[in-house]
Image (cartoon, rainbow, N blue to C red; front, side, top):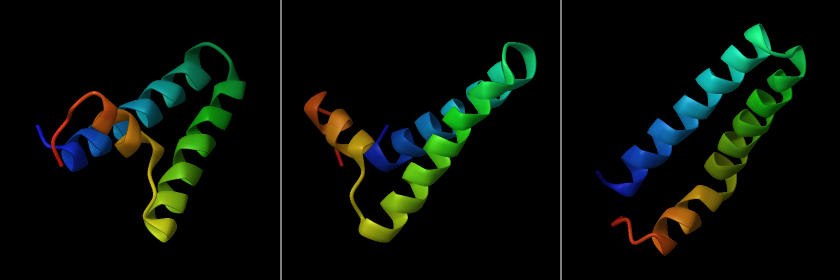
Length: 62
């Protein structure tokens, strides 16, 4: 799996997990969803993505 695909899968998974946690555990987990969304927005504007740097260190191909 290539890096771009992995980033999308990870981001989508984090959003769904945090929404489930907000629903069943504590409503404050919604802030994690906001954090993920803000990072996606920032990444789209600046073209810099922390997850890309992390995956590159693990040897995932671009």
